[in-house]
Amino acid sequence: MIEKTLVLIKPDAFAKGFVGNIISIYENSGLSFEKAKIVLPSKALLEMHYKAHKGKPFFNSLLDFMSSGKIMALVVSGDSAVQRVRNINGATNPDDAEEGTIRKLYGTSIEKNAVHGSEDPPAAKEEIALWFE
Ligand code: CMP
Image 1 (cartoon, rainbow, N blue to C red):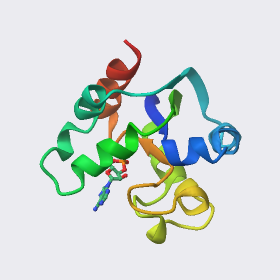
Image 2 (tube, protein in one colour; image 1 turned 90 degrees about the horizontal axis):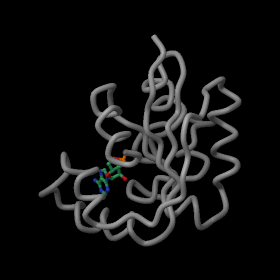
Image 3 (cartoon, rainbow, N blue to C red; image 1 turned 180 degrees about the horizontal axis):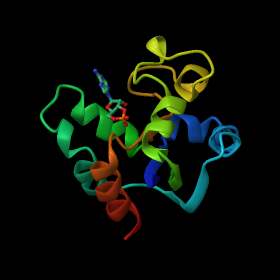
Image 4 (cartoon, helix red, strand yellow; image 1 turned 90 degrees about the vertical axis):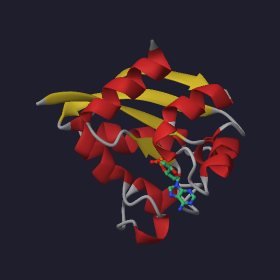
């Protein structure tokens, strides 16, 4: 089924100049781009985006990091796009991510893990609305 999902290229990867390389990985896997923009996100936006993690020990640090620099937000589409993006991104912790995944290639810690991809189709719908509507 054709799906849409939200990808965020996080401040660590953006600042290091990996945006082009990362976008190429999605593109070369046959996924398409519907929307894209560069944002310096507010804490308020990030609180909504990461509401599932509110109260966790890493929440404040995550918001500080995610608001520390520019992000590229993308709506990515394709057959089973949500799961395909998650597979391409790799495990949350780059140490656990498989070779060739974006987080293995460009992530440096569980927090500075280069990219975000929506967890499932309902989350994708909510996140796309939050970042683009
Ligand atoms: P992301 O896919 O953006 O979704 C939630 C984010 O929280 C995750 O990637 C990580 O960047 C971050 N995260 C998850 N677990 C931890 C943790 N234990 N410590 C620090 N950051 C975490």
